[in-house]
Every structure is written in C-alpha cells, then in structure tokens.
Image (cartoon, helix red, strand yellow):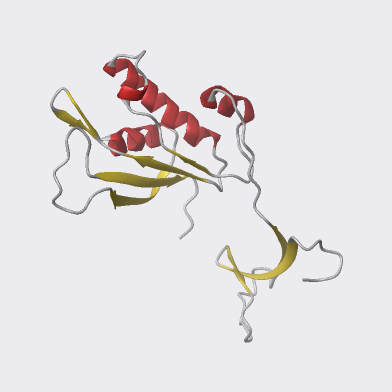
Length: 173
C-alpha cells in the first residue's frame, strides 16, 4: 500500500504487451517499445448492490452496466406459470438477450441453466442462451457442464447436469 490510498485501495503497476496488461514481475521485463512500459491502476474492493425491481425493466433503464458483469439463472417454464410454453421460449430468448445487452464491452454475461423435459422432449436451455447471444452480438467465452448428480444417475423431468456458459463481446486472446 502506498501513502494517500485508503486501506481498501492499493496501486498495481502493470506492463502492457500485445494490448494486454500484466502485473510487473519481480525480474526485469523487456517491453514492446511500441507500447507503454507500465500504467498505474488502482484496485478497490468489490462492491455489492441489491435492487428490488423487475430485472428486465431495471436492466433496460441502467444499461450498460459500466464496470460490471452479470451472473444469472433464468427461470424455466414451470416457474412462470402465467405463460404457455411457446410464450416462455420467446420470453426466455428476450430475457437472455436483455441480460447480454446490458453488459459493457469489457464485461461477461454468465448463465447457469438446467435442461428440462417438455412434452416428452428435452429443452436445451444452453442452446436457447446461445441463440440469444448471436442476437446480442456476444461470443461464447466458455461452456462447462456442472453435474448435479453422479454420472449414470437417472433423473425424472430434469437433467442431472446444468450448463455454465459465459459470453463476452470483446474476446481477449
């Protein structure tokens, strides 16, 4: 910590290489002469704000969420009893796109979604989110499978796994 910074802030010296910034290592670095040697960045402790409102209305009123990313799990059709299945699918796509559109260019939208069965067929909510990402001009950053039950465990009506998907607008190589 350096003088003049509150206890929750600390300066971090960075060097930049090929457009990305890295903490300065303890040893001597040979920088790219076309880029700045280092920059001063102040890190602060993360904050958390809770808002009680209709999420889609709130996102529309506050986008883009500068300096933020979003982690969410959208409800399935059984949780929105007022909508028929086709109405839910349309709502789901619009809601996923609204979440992604609210994320700034340097942010990430992360979805945790479980597939469900409807009328005897599987509904792949990971695919629904990916379709919304295409509409929102977002790129798939990662897709992981999270097991809810041990492999080989039979489940009824709901998959024994969930999708964990991350999307970003600007990919950093």
